[in-house]
Image: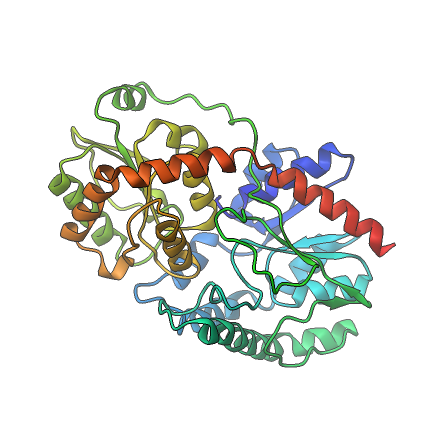
Length: 405
C-alpha cells in the first residue's frame, strides 16, 4: 500500500478536477482502488509472490535485477497486454518505472506520458541509483551507478520486449547507459513523489525533472481501533511502532523472533505489525500484535517508528515527526535508511541480514534515548506537513498534457 496509496490519492485529486482516472496494479489492490472511486485495470499475478521472490535474504544491488528478471519471466507474456488494455482510450499515461515499456505504449498511441519515481533514478553526483550496493565511494561512483543500472535495465528490456515492440510497430530502443525521455518528439516530464526536504534536488537535473513533495492526504481516513489497541496505546510509556509491511521471504519468522527478543532486551513497549510476513508470533504484556493499522493514524500515537524503509513508510514516519530506525531488506530501502540518518532523524540503518536481538535492542535504546533525533524529526515533520505534493503533481500533469497539444 505504501507504493499504491499515493497513486490513489493522486487519482482522486485528478478526478476531483474533472478527469476520469484508471489505476493499474496487481489484482490484489482492486478493493482499495475501487473504494476510492477510481476505475481499476488489473495486472495478472500476485504481488505477495512477486515481493517474496525479489526480497529473499541476501538481496543487494548486484543481484536485485537478476531476481527481478526471474520474476518477469512469469509475467512477461501477460504484462504488456495487461498494460496495453489499461491504456486503451487513455488521454495520457502517468507511469511508475516499467523501463521504457510505457513510453512505447504512449508512442504507439501518440499520447502524453509522465514518468514518476519514488527514489533517485536520474544520474547525479550526490546520490547513487537507489538499488546500488550499500557502499559509498564518492561522486564518480554515484554517477557510475546510473550508467551501470541503465545498461543492465536496457539490456534486460531488449531481451524481453524486442519482439513485442516489433509486433506493435514501435521502434526498438537501443541499449543505453541513460534513460531515453523522448516520445513522439516530446520530452517525457519526470515527477519525483518525494520532498526536497528529505532528498535535496540535484542542480544538474534537467528542467523536465521536478520534485513535487510527497503525495499524501490532508485528511486522515476514518479508522476505529479495537478496544485492546486503544487500551494499549493509552498506557505509558508510549510504545514504539515496529513493522516491515509487504516484506515477505523465507526467514520472516526468524526476523520477527529477533524483533521480539530485541524488544524484550531493550525493555520497551511496542506495537508490532506482522505485515505480509504472517509469522506465528504471540502478543505479550508489552507487545501488541496487529495485522494492518493505517500509518497516518497510528504514527501520531507512538514514540518512534522502526520499519523496512519503503518510500511510502518513510514519508509517513517523517511527516508524523517521529524518530525513525530503518531495517532495510533490499532495493531503495538502504538509500532511505541512510537519508534518515543523514537528516539526524534516527540511528544508522542495519540491514535485515545483519540484524540481531542485541543490535536491535541497542538501536531501540538509542532511538528513544537520543533527544536530538526527536527534535530533528519533529522539526522536519512540521515542514513536511506544509507541503501539498498531490496538488503540485496534479498541476504539473495538467500543464504537461496541455503542452503536448
